[in-house]
Image (cartoon, rainbow, N blue to C red; front, side, top):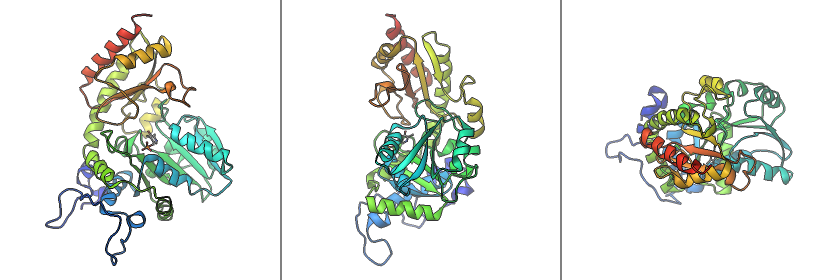
Length: 374
Ligand SMILES: *Cc1c(COP(=O)(O)O)cnc(C)c1O
């Protein structure tokens, strides 16, 4: 197999994990196995992995620029990072991030396992200051769901304790738009459930690091907690990832189109998309991201009721949670328990690979119907 550094990521996505010997299957083999004949060093999959998981690890590791480990879900990979903390550690978390991560961090703090400090995603000076004392610096950029972009180039290079972990949830950016390890992060996380898989048909997560000691530590966590990926899921994630670059390129084009049209719409109060000049962290996004992504958040005039009505009236766009798939999905985030702090009418739209004009026709019609009564 060609090395990931010899070819463009677009080519790596298509070629990674394939066989190389005459007679090898062209595609990644689906190996449903808990145990293997003793003698090769691979005996039990929870400890030693399987060829199918390793294909996913090779693929994502090559993209992120490190050594990867696949997990049962994005949260399983994230929990393995938190699992490295000694009791009493200081964890620094963004004020806007994936609710599962916030939930995990808050629950651990309540049990006295660590203390928690929250910092605004775009408050770079506060992040740099916190790096000096923190044991785990947790970053997510662009953030979920407000799409604020953190200055990873500066934060990941800030002086920190030798033992500190800088973890970046890279799910929204994908390794095609951002490579946190290149900025100096310890570990990059992917919920492969989202863009890597890309078809809303699996749960998987991947952690990638350049620190071999850290890789062995999270591998030990995976072994001891049993947070192993499903074999079919790993196979599907590789299969889905083959088309990641073309999916992302097309969805990103449509996202820019929709963001611009939403911004000009009289019933839209505010659009958050890192590609818009009006976005508060647009300049940072231009510097640290290769592309602005496929997620748009926007607030409607008329509040939660109107936002709910838009969700009811879209037809091509699916009223569903999650993101990063071939199909466009949209939901009102403040309707989710625990997310009531968000603007009540904020809709998060994950743009898929449908035709961009068709998506706009669908969305504009739904907004028209929903706002006709106000
Ligand atoms: C979905 C998501 C996760 C969690 O991943 P799962 O695969 O659902 O466990 C973590 N971070 C971000 C940014 C996500 O979107």
